[in-house]
Length: 254
Image (spheres, rainbow, N blue to C red):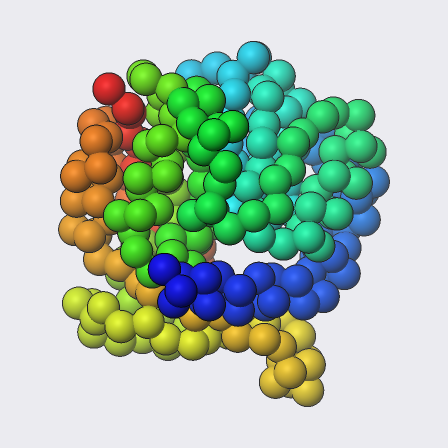
């Protein structure tokens, strides 16, 4: 447990390094981003829209929801969205964007493995994550237990993440190290967006501690922690459609 607290603390420092300014530079000011979200919320959800049965009145936990890039479109479509994320800077950007979009979101700054289950147990209709988050958690079973606990009976988990193929080939071009597909060790590495900074800043950026999983580790953890797997989709890499880049697993709590 102490090891988990230590790597979580290190990841928090990394995700609060210049994060607000980074989102302004890459996604626009909160008001600029809000205009895009309001103009086409379904379009802003991209491929993930097809995994939602409906939006209106649905309670959604957006896990590691970052700057609100998917939470705000979901809220605009009528969902009741709570972001759980470790970064205060992410909260600032997300909340300012939501305000500019004239929509309400909830934002809990916390370690995902320490979500207050006295408040949120069996609270959500959907738990949703995307953008590559599983590698931040070094015990995937502990993570999946929390996801299961957050859902109401019959609730759905939409888990979209980087494809494990990225362990052996950097098919998404993130500049992350490759390794044996079956490697289980943790490693220290750059933030995914470090490549957008000049070299002198990049060298000073705090590192994260990662653990990458295989397909079987991910699917077995979903199944062994009580979920019924409904579908597993693989998506091509962003710049090379011949290679796997991401996946989406959909599972329900019976």
